[in-house]
Image (tube, rainbow, N blue to C red; front, side, top):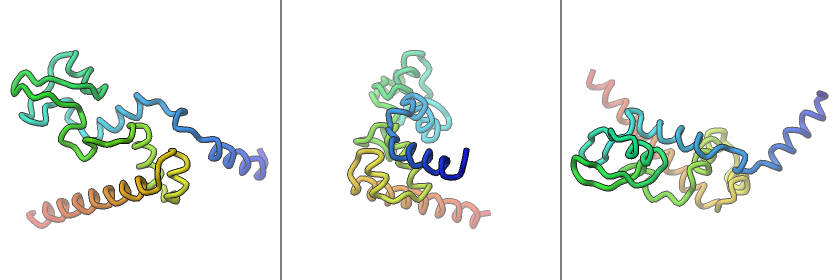
Length: 143
């Protein structure tokens, strides 16, 4: 492949990119494993979800009933993603594109979302990083 063909190929891939090319389940599982590294559990009482149906519902973002405390919740309840108006694939790609420092307008175009949505999530991610850094500093200071 010549350099010109390679550049044209990359440009064409970028121009024709669609979120539909990504697997929704894979993105959903990646995000849920990041926000729930210890697995499916109730945000109210902290008990692990034990039933197969409860675990399945949890990872499909459906409602789960906690048999211990009687709370009804989803995997996003009690997280920063609760009430998020983006589907998980869009959110996942938004995070990837922001990490790659792609221009906000380009991200909005690629994901078919408003530039203000991109800006607000960028601010949220920065705030999460600052909180994480403060927690790490606090832990290292305590040692």
